[in-house]
Image 1: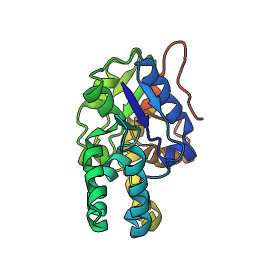
Image 2 (image 1 turned 90 degrees about the horizontal axis):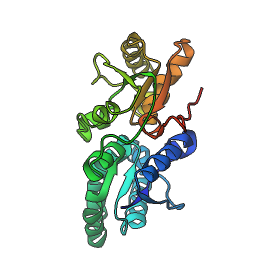
Image 3 (image 1 turned 180 degrees about the vertical axis):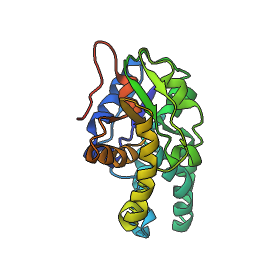
Image 4 (image 1 turned 45 degrees about the horizontal axis):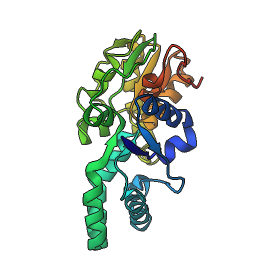
Length: 250
């Protein structure tokens, strides 16, 4: 199988180790990967803050760039939700019939990482080894937009050595929400404080998720509170083996 990797601007800029982990993981599973160097952003930040022109531009770029891809894999439920939920409206506003048809043909081939592994590759045991106590934060986009359900747990349950700890109030938002945390800093901080209580109460060594945006928000608070817990994207756990442990940012 051949797949194109849309790494997302967030990961490319701040968490390149996640992209490297996706490559290691999928190549280990026999997937041939393409990487388009002209990729930029899905346009979510622009759309959510009213910059429609910029969002139109990013949507058109994404559709045209990947129109011939067999599949597109994205290690971010937030970006996949943007493509599935907001691109239809953007394309409709543009009134470009050819672009609409290109998008409708492309969108069934766009997958978040856990979806790709389970729904497309039909694999749950990816040969991973991660001997640590881990809790999982279910991001809002993964839960409410993509309805990922049990997919992340099914993958983690097959990781050798991993001790998965249940997180209370797992459906609560961490408070990040992209520009929401900037525009509504006090509300965001209050939401983060409540979420962090549940995360730290697990006693886990690592908190994982499918979005590095949530993990950055949580990780910053952990660092400020000297919590002794680290954050790690699920892709890095799944890519980890005994011979090639996960890259962990301290």
